Length: 406
Image (cartoon, rainbow, N blue to C red; front, side, top):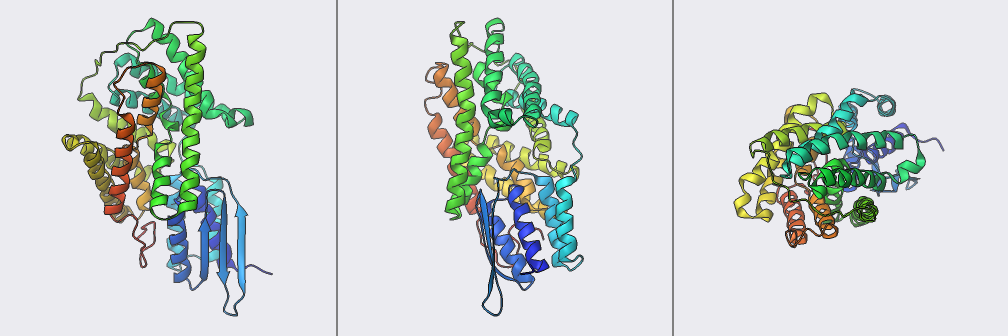
C-alpha cells in the first residue's frame, strides 16, 4: 500500500517533535490540530520509547504507524525550525513533500555553535552557578575550570559507546576526585557545591519537572516513564559522587571545609545572566532567540528572589507565572514556540540541584543545615506545577496549536 504524502509528513513531524524533546501531550495535541486543519483524521500517541499513529480513511479503513524510538533530547533551535516549517504547510506556502524534505535537512544542518563556544558555555555555566550557590571565588574558579573537564569527557563520549553509557557517573566521579584533592590544599573550596556547579548541565531538574508536567496533564504513561528516567539519571550522578568520596576517604581524611562566602551579593545578578546565557548553547537555541531567552531566565529567577519573603512555595509559584507570561509575550513577538522561552525561565527554578545538595551533604556529614531539604524540593515542585496550571499551560486548546506558534 502506497502511503499518502500527508501521512508521511505527519509521521515525520511527530518523530521530529519527539526527537527534539517536546512533551508527549503537547506533541499529540499539536499533531491532532494540524491533521484537523488539513482534513486528516487521525489519533496519535507519543511515549518516551515508541510512537503510534492511526489514520482513518472514509471507507472505514485505517493506516497504522508504529515505531520504536529512543528518548528525545531538548533542542530548542531545531524545534523553532520545525514549527516554522509546519506553519508554512498550514498556510499552503509549501507542500507536504517539501516540508518532509525540510525536516530531514534539519537533522544534517548543525546550528551555529562550534566546539569552542560549547566549551566556554560549559565552563561559564559551572562558574556562574557556583556564584549563585553563595560559595567563594576559589570554588567558582575551580568550578569554571572543571566545566572544561566535563566538556572534554562529553566530547569523548561521542566517540565511545562505553563512555557514553557511563557518562553521568564518570563525570561526577572525575569531578569529585579532583575537587576533593584540591579541597585538601585550598580551604575555601566548598566540596558539595563545587561538584554540583561543575555538573549542572547534567542535573535532571528540568526533566523531572517536565515529567511531573506530563503526569499533571494526564499523560500518565509518558510522564511516569520520564520521571523514573530522570531519577535514574540523578542517581547515576550521585553514585559517581559517592564512589569518588569513598575512594578519597580510603586514602585521605576528607571533611567539608568551613567556607566563607567572599563574593559580593550584587555579583549574583551578573551570574544569573551569565548562567542563562551559557545554558542556551547547551539547549541549541537559535541566535535570534538568545536575548529573549536570557530575559525570561533572569525575570523568573529575579522574581523568586524579589518575593522570597513570602516563602519558597509562593515565590516559585509567582516566578513560574512570570516565566510563562514572558514565554507567551516573546512567542507573539517572534512567532517562535513558547517552549523556546519557557525552558530558560523554568530551568532557573527547578529543584534538581537542591536534591543533589541534600544527598551529597549527608555523605559529607554537613550537619543539620540541610535537614529540611526534602521539604524545600517538594515545595519547589508544587510551586512550578501550580504556576503552570494557573497560567493556563495545561489548557487543551482547540483553535490554537499546542506549541503556540501564532
